[in-house]
Image (cartoon, rainbow, N blue to C red):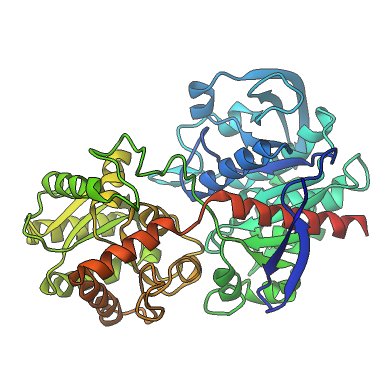
Length: 512
């Protein structure tokens, strides 16, 4: 078995040439620790969980010695059978001494996941907070978790080649590794990678919370974790991690600009030689319209007949008219970032063009109320379900003609990848991962997979939808569009190759 030569585009415009892919026979497997506040199948609030779980699965399938480290939340304890490792540790977090045990999914030398058991911090009904707001001790909870990742390695005699950190909740891992652990323990050869899933979430806390991290005021500086007189856990990770990445190449470039950098663009520009963009994948076994038993009928790109049955079922369940009008589907978190103000303001124009709209999602109360009201205003043309149901989400992907994503910004995006797989043609704003995963059919005739617009405006959104409508009226063109969408490859295989490259680059930096 040989190795493949891959090229990873760099946000600064250069190209890095590195070997990756299948290992030669006899090659030593990497020991990988994926530190994440959530991961499927154990616990999930968003797309981060899908990424962490998928990377674990893919690397283990390739023979790498990969394990997750997560907090032992109440939901995990109640939902999974775990095993105590018999190891525990106590850390001085400022004036508090906090103890934890280590549990695992199995008793092998390389289980799929380790869990940090500390009931006072993690035995709660939710992961990060309730409807009333974030937990007030999140600074302590995730500072402790970040140190616990490293303590787990020491307690179990794990010497990782790389620790892959994810978002602000693990942002202190690279800091603790470099300043407290790398020189004093057996972790001298361990590299750190930090993935930014959404730069808008940074882990900001009052500066007085530094006492809960176990760190001194010497770490409250602009080149470490100080940010406008507050603690910033993500900034700590950006300063200390050996290599950084985010979840699309376009987003990696966008966050270098002040309008997209959330106050961290200057730091990111300083580190742009270490910043990469890697598009997320989706699980093509889980999201397979040819075998999806949540659908009333199955289909593939060569035989789309089953899609007609899915469309009929969607219209019936959504209470929409069955008059041949094109259907726009929307599935997502109801938040300003996702462009729901454009959707609400632009709905009359979309309806005037002849579209029907079906929406499934939950999120900010303002948008829930606003969109529910529009559903009542346009009965039989607009259907809104507040909440989330996997079966109905799949029905939207499989039955809608178009899938609308007018995001203000979108680091990667999951909905458009599923929509492509199921043949719902994306109409999306040209930003972040949407730019990298959708080819506009008018700009590349015969090659396109959707329709893109640039300006964040109702006019631009409606214009792109109108271009989609013209394609819909041409049966042969639209069928070709669906078939190209369904055969676009956004599986995890290519993404895992690129993460392997990233790990190799991080290890090279540590070994210098």
